[in-house]
Length: 503
Image 1: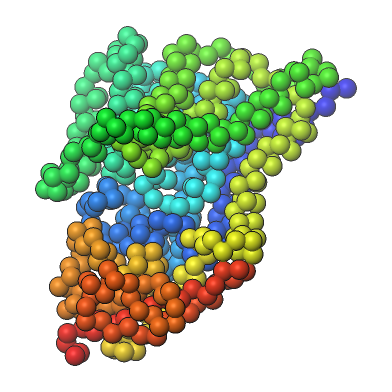
Image 2: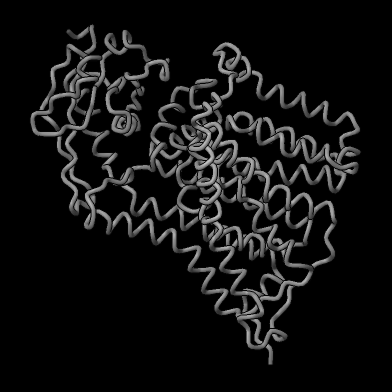
């Protein structure tokens, strides 16, 4: 008698329910992990909140949408970073919803769920998705763009133009990589006769009008800021290093696909003693254009994004790994054929659960075990709430006013900027990056300058002392970490710049 597990029966009979169970469970997992083991938000989140607090139309970090949404989520949860964690997981859910809807229209709901299950094992959607910012917000928008682009190109649904135009506009308001990413669907649409026919109407013109309305304020800011230029091309002597960097980035993407490769390997008939006895998930034949669409967007963002990032010396693939690898799971399902045999069901189930849980287990072990085996500091180990509370209360006791701004060490200053009074972040080393606070304004309104103290004397570093020659250092404040291990106390040197009116 053939055994079929409950999971496979759910894939066959209730694919939508299976989708929501898987996606909701993974989102809940990555909501609980930071709440349980992170003493401070991941690297970059404090800066996103500091920029979002200002509601600038644009900044040196790019378009404003991610920063605005982060601040709204932070305020909506009473000034707790859990709002940002929730927003990040909402992005995860919408990303996979867009992928599921796209896959469902191409290969049917049963194979769409299998594509979602494979994509969920890609490590790019694990811990990195907790650090909300432009790269994380771009993922759901890109998934929706691909879905509605296919609705127009492959299924001829003109009603999708309005949704697509809004999603394109929001993507342009999210990441500086959006123009480069949008060249891919435009290029695909112009490459085939069937795709070109879908563009022969007035709908694209109306879509461009919606996009223009959405991005107009940011476009005006860009023109005034005069920052349209691309990053500089490397010198001829740097081409070798940049090529190596591109290969490293692409190799990192391949490593992130290790879970997909493992599941595909375990599901081959070579590892099954009774290959003819495996349950089968069937789909109708796939549209040839759909096959081209999936393969193109599974390969082009990763390959071209790695090359472009290497050429321009960027730290990550254009658009981020989440965008580059979004379609890989669907491409694997597409390549498998109309019949997907699910062999060795218990092994597959165990392997999938382990692959999904492994990044979370690694994050927990790193937070709990790493402090005992290494003195290296993790960004999420800093006692953010204690730091922000102490310096905010110290300034208010001394001056009778809420802390208006904080400067000095960017990492510490960013954590203090998340405090109760939400002080402005002032990057004194590069003041042009924080135009909402000028050096003169900081001296006039006052604030706190912080730095990492090397000893109990608390002498400021030479660069900070040069920028703030009149400060009088206080005794350094030592903060205990949640899990100290081999790490020393965190000593923070500080000084108060008193408001002019109280001197």
